[in-house]
Length: 157
Image (tube, rainbow, N blue to C red; front, top):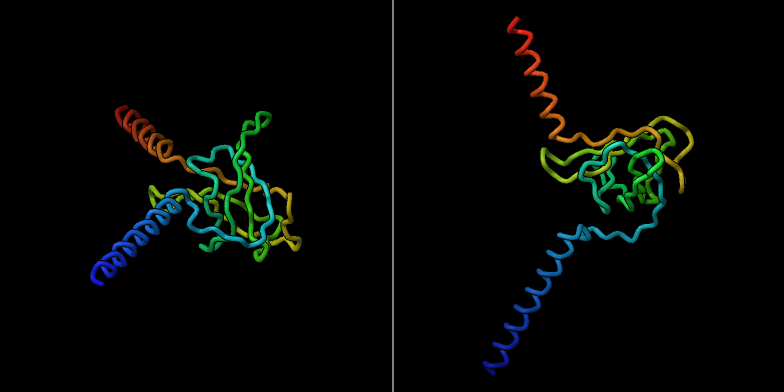
């Protein structure tokens, strides 16, 4: 009897460990928020997407309204084409703008949508024309340092 009880506890512990491993694998693969909601695809073009990855969240007013479906390079315009899968429950005006933002200072990048005022809504296959590329921290720091160096040279005269 005691052997069966011990086997039961060992089995439960192994199942709990396996469930934890599956959870960590899904979290690491950014698959923990699988959604089976109906979606429609829209595209955007960015000059620089920074560290944006497929399956990154698409947010509006802090609420996740979709996911990044695909990222491709357009060799004619030399821009990144990002395909967004937006949930059908969320409708956005045609003049909506898209920005690549960062969660915190060094967090993951996501796309933020800002609704416009158009009366017509985005539909499957439409393109968001107003975009703002990712702010690359290294570029920001180098601009700051170069401006400080230029101020130092001007102050010497």
